[in-house]
Image (cartoon, rainbow, N blue to C red):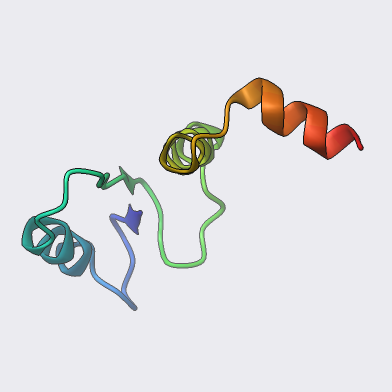
Length: 68
């Protein structure tokens, strides 16, 4: 995840890391904003879905565990 206007960690650093990692399970999300900007809900949803997929957690399993 990288903010296009991030002055602390420039988005090209994230792009370089993304390119250098040879694994299959990777995702780079670049969003409009800076280092401390509130992340858009769409971006958070993409992160949530990526992490759940990597750990084999379905949305239903997560919803059930959060209610307990």
